[in-house]
Image (cartoon, one colour):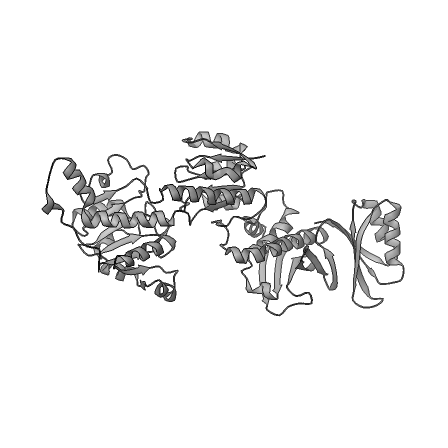
Length: 525
């Protein structure tokens, strides 16, 4: 059985499907040293935001195939190292969207109506209504930095409160924003217009400190700032300065650059700040959903499938992935065949897609071809995650071509592998019962891309096929199928035989020594 380590608290009952095929261990509060010590035993690791999945942890995970993050943010996981090691990193970006959006709206109400301050005052025996006069949200401007899934839900709820919503997101088109009823503006315009500025972006080098000293100077003195995204996007030191200098009216902070924040963090006691301990995704419903989502993806990867929300692989809609999956398998088989019958010292690879398959994103298909090829020539783990990285390290270039017109067999993938000594081109298609090879260099033929195959190039003359078949029979090698492709009668030809047993080297030499044969290879697909 597979072994899975869950190192942060999750609802165990939502991991039922995973428990049916894996031994699942729940071990919380592990130090880095402890985690590094135990991770070599596990095939998968499931975390929330508490566990730091460092390069040392990933390198120690010799069996590790997948790291699942039960939530959205993955800044606690070293993605480049995971990718280089072929470890899939998958998150659950949809499970806590509503929870995070609702928490953002709740904090906005808390700021506008001074709810936490009034609560503390009344619990302390005071009755000072005039001290906590608030503001209505109606007709105020909400500016959302980022317009992804969470921000979209925040915008919808804000519009229900009769707020006007503007957004800054360089990756969203004006048409997309317009469909959401949101005006797309520059960051400077947002900062100068918004009564409430809420950030909903991942923490990256480009977003770290995005809301800092310069940003605060561009805001209204009556504006409020909210961060229910990732700690570090709002510069905490600059925020304190802005509050003390009266550049903004207040802030609501759910996430911190250091979690938990140290007791002397001034945000925790500042009178203009509402703080919560990273509760954005902390609802019963959200925790159940993200646990279920990440468990399903971990299970899929362990069983040889793909993760729906892999963050170190292209994001492909499920309906497109259903179409692409058989072509990914086909590309892998073509890559394996090319490495076994051609020169494995390749420096170039070309993939050509013909027909309807050319309409789709071929990132996974290309990775499949690279994986199939590299599996035969390197002694490190290769998968769809790191195949292109390893290929680049070996200086194997990749070119992509697309043709909307169908080929002889309809939707066809062609793979050309180029080395200093030769080029080999293989073509394949997908039929109802799986992937098929339909072309070997210039020869059209059809055979299943599975099992052991023997390929013989020869001059097309009477009796050649019979002699090869008879020779295999005398050595007790059973033939499961046989196909021939030829350029013309009595021209060059290739025969492909499915064989149930490995063909010994001496038998290969006997075939090559026949008068009309000049090239013999066998491969396992």
